[in-house]
Image (cartoon, rainbow, N blue to C red; front, top):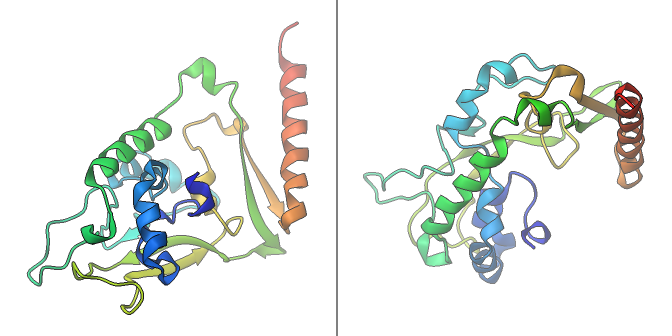
Amino acid sequence: MADKFIDGSRGCRYYHLGENKIDIIKTLGSLPASYTLNWLGENAFNSIREQLGRDLFKIDSYPSRDRADPYNPPDPDQNGRVRYPARLGFSREELKNGLKVCTDLVGPLPDELAKKFFNIRGVQKLGEALNQTISGTSWDLVDPNFDPRHDKSPITDDFGPGDEVLAAWSTHLVTLPADNRKTVAGQITAAGEKLAARALQCTACANLLQSPA
């Protein structure tokens, strides 16, 4: 259900913005899935940093700055500012659960299963890849009484290649065999899903042809 409210790895962003509506923020805070759709924890990112750095759409540094791991919020600073304003319904317990789900999802697959799993990502491209997808964020702390209706958002976005929803670097499962990772590049619109569907069909057919009878 959280997919109706938040978008890919931007859960934290929408929690703070809430479309300037307190009820939206409190709804997000009540949905367990909201706590799983953030940037990777920094430890998980560091474990595959070298592989991510070899990708065509590589990323060299942790995408949530400065060292703003969404799953490891710091203690209040000297001015009492915090990562998450608790009065808006944020749950640290659900954050712990979200970290476990996220960690399980990014863990390596068994070798036999990895051979059968294909990763297809979309990249907006008109000649060159378009930098129109949120690929990183800078994330300031906020006052405990932060109010999105009046206060400036602590989130500033960086843009890079992707499908306008998910960054290209984040939709590439680098732990898979290289031949199992496919990129569909082109003008991806509402109808552009046909490109991905066509690529999936071709990949599935090729996989069946290679499989023993």
